[in-house]
Amino acid sequence: MYAFYINLDRRTDRRAEVEKEFADKDLVVERFPAIEYTPGTIGCNLSHIAVLKTARARKYPAVMIFEDDFQFVVSKETWDQLIVQLPERYDVVMMSYNTVQPTPYNDVLDRVQGAQTTSGYIVHSRFYDTLIAKWEEGTELFKQHPHVHWVYLLDQYWKPLQPLSDWFAFKTRIGIQRAGFSDLAGQFVEYGC
Image (cartoon, rainbow, N blue to C red):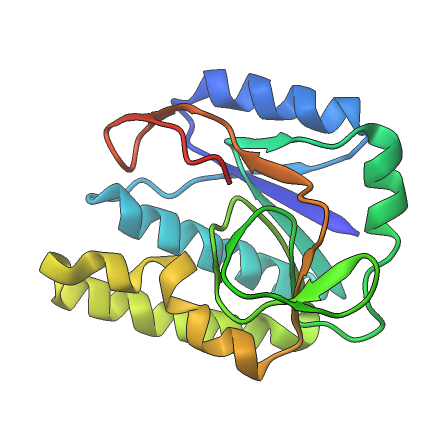
């Protein structure tokens, strides 16, 4: 499966950290230069949209998307066992998440009803257009209503799609957002998911 990671040009520290993560798992992941924008949260939205558009243009059947603060919390062996167990039909599969009331699907996956974080996820090509349209809508609303920006962040604005779609999360959390300085928050953060 093809994979991208999103990284600001100036965050060479994060680039080095995440590339080591990928090397440890024998993953080939293309760097996507993050879009600089003020506020940075809109740049984050635009970057994820651009990655999906790139995957669509290249006709990838599915794409893994990582943010540059993604940190694996499973061994290479566990990763290798889990990643080959994607469901036959899926729209999105989350590798890192903060989820509320997941429903068991099988021994490996839960069906997602309300989950957040975009640090690591997989999107099937049949869902590219849906997710792009949803996120473009949210980004435009974000620009119009910056005082309530949090509701238009990617990982909040995609939530209404989750119960209506084939949306899953690995029961075994594959990764988390690495603790560190966040350009979006402008401070050190440790989300733990």
